[in-house]
Image 1 (cartoon, one colour):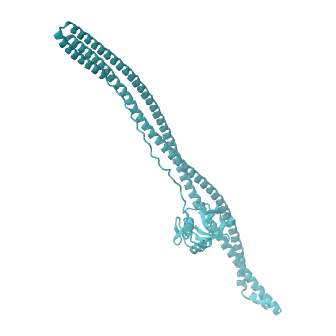
Image 2 (tube, helix red, strand yellow):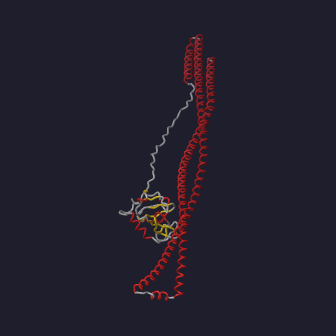
Image 3 (cartoon, rainbow, N blue to C red):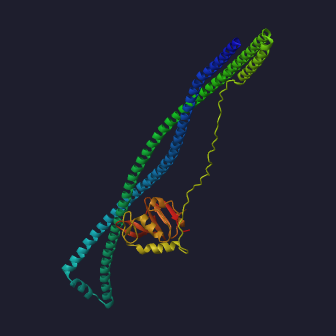
Length: 470
């Protein structure tokens, strides 16, 4: 009996040792594998977060680049248009300088004519003063007949009338040439101011284009840097994915080996339990044969009790197999909300004039302010306006909203040819705009010297004719 108990204790300790060896082996391997895999997953998640940030930055830079490129293209177009207008102004300046020289020549000719007529008038006056009225009286009294007398009187009157007409013609010519020269000088001064303004605008535009191109270059550098970072993040993700796959493969192999070890331990434990049970049965049988009949019953009872205990121990050893660690897999699916497509578009609002308003109504209203002053940047029809401010304020009276810029007005409404021009149309020049009155005349804010006035439409090169009222 004592031998049997000793054997059972030995078998139980051996089985327990096998289980402890398997548990220790599993416990020592799992933390190492889990640690490397966790580190790889953390590194992968960080790289994915950085990649998303880099892609967002790339998208933002690309969007800002596209917007900036559109601004640069618009500025380039505006600069080209400005240079074209400057060329037109240069041609007009040359024409005005030629016209001024021609006016100067006419003025000099008029002055020479005035000097000649003045000398003649002095001689005639001197002759009349020296001779007095007696010469005329003698001429009249020397008539031989009434008809001759009337002829002499008529001749004297014609001489005086001729002198007065020549003098008046000279004065008119001189005044006309002087007025023409004044007008040309004023227009020349106005063109020079416009040319100077264009040069300032050209300088500002070139500076702005240069600045924006510098920003574009900086965007290129930022974009290249962001793409480099994104490539590095992608490489990190790929590397960590490979590490995770390697660690998962190691876990699979380790789990497979652990399962094999556990199966082997269970097989050995089961075999040891069976061997212990067999040896216990043999010992019990030997004890039964050597005991007396009285002790036989007792031995049988004891043997039954021992068999029962051995059976229970065997059953317990078979049922108490080490548990296998399971790695529950969890997954989470996320569905990004689908945003509805955004709709966008610029809508151009066009003011509508009152029913029945015509271009003639516009001119009738505009001509009320002839004689009012010219003011740079002004929009008041009474206190002063510049060329575009005058046109803008006149059309505002009829419900139309036009820009306060002569260059921008050249793109408003509908373009027509000058031969089709009607009252109320916009006549656009380089840096100037006015309203067509009809009959080849315009009304507009001309200059600080002339104010709001009328003049010939073709006095300068016409760039465009725009019809606002259809």
